[in-house]
Image (cartoon, rainbow, N blue to C red; front, top):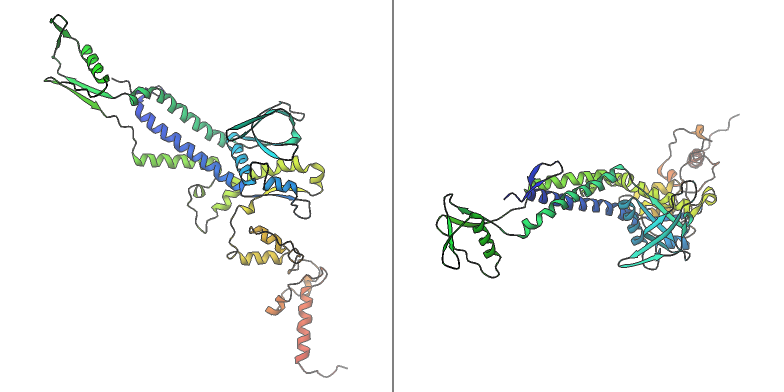
Length: 427
């Protein structure tokens, strides 16, 4: 009669159906929230660009092509970094192997030596592409792989919370099989009622209540339509067991899980829930606190394994450039972009910031410095009073030794000499 009562982890008797319903919904919500958080960060990394610089300018060579466009024959750069970031966030590590052909693959499994003071050796590397799996027979040293590590206490706690919820729900589900799979009935009878039947010889036999219930079970198990005759004072009723929870409780549960998951992945709750406004800086906070640490982890590994110590010291860099991920409205940002042009950014650099391809022409790579930050000549005119035309004339590249204040005074003196009549010479 009390088969659907269940003891939880605290050995407290509770309703099994309530435990099943609540924990199962918690499990689904926790899995969904975690999946959403991981996808948000993975999409940000996948939409960014891996930049390679030789110290003077960006380089777009074969290595750039492999890291951004086609890491291997079966994946694009977006698919590759999306899968790598998801694995890094969900498993706290991700191994990227570089084959002799120059192609990159995300390992689905591997074995690494436990060396601390020397370079690790990686073996039993398994690559998976959908349903196809291949085991690489060769071994890799630490220079042949990019072993990413990322994780903190909050992430591990969030994952453990999901596992604990799953374990409790799974334990309850094991006892739920007979409850959900077998119809249940209530058999009502008067206290002093007796049940009789006849044996094969026609003699009356008194049945106990247990034998009566056993006969009812046999009749209910029969295939086809079963008709059970009720005598006066008895009835058989079907028990409809409901497993739902109130809507408001479900909403509270969802909000709680979303808040915990967003906090674990350092994602602003407004961004996580899609409630950002035009004036909100939540997107910048999302990039700063949730995406940038992952990008830094990847950038450091690329510099360590692809660039190397000597080239890094000489100025070569490889890094994840997140500006490609964030949308920039060129109309709204026109004034700010113009200021960048005025302090030395080339036209091509500004185009790349807003997601456009560089023109790679001589004039688009020139730098126009329209402000003078030098110390020489500062005392010649602390508060210049030039016209708008004077300021417009400054949009040229001038020598660092030239004072803009001196040029303005010279132009004003020339215009004054043309307008005013010449005065008497001084003796």
